[in-house]
Image (cartoon, rainbow, N blue to C red; front, side):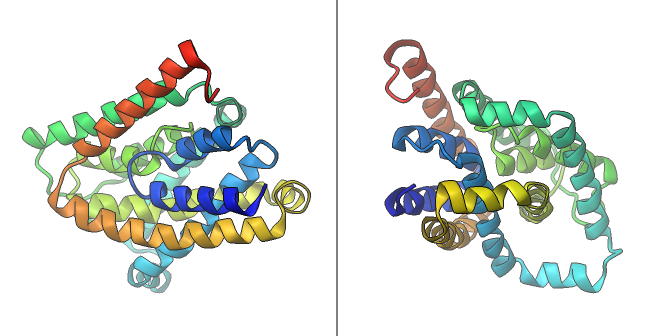
Length: 264
């Protein structure tokens, strides 16, 4: 992998990780465009790890509260949601790895992400968003965790799915997005730990240390600004604009697979 490709993929990861458009789907798409195949999954995991720095930089106060109060309601909600994600991840591990390597699901899953975002936005007319940390139930956390597990499929947005399900369950917009971003921390750390041995081999043999460092730095910086943008944007706008984007992207990919074969 050359430095230009690693830098561009890092920027793409950082921007799309916290927007509801699926960072993994964009990485698979652009890795195909760039002709990157060796170490692709390992590089994806490491770029996700890099975005943890952005989450920590933005939510350090919340994280410090969690550390100081490990049995708080927010901590328990995150643990319950993460357990739901882990069950999905372990149960369908081989399928998720196949989905990532093949790219066959990209088009339909981008469209599915668009549908989730569109109906989450439409739900504002009939759902009262009143739940904060205190009133959010463990069942709410389970549903959000299951949505995060579904988003292990490339092109299904993790942030989009978790925020949308949070809204469907009646969470306040501000708490839904904060909970989604905090839930990303164990969701990113877990795969990195479980795949540590393979990641180490890929870093040295397939990716290269310098391209990896460049990609991770770019992902972390872009991720920070992406979080800031999303927090500001979501407080005053809807998810519908993102649904139109992924609808169009998914349609383009399907047409390419059926008729043109430019990318796949």
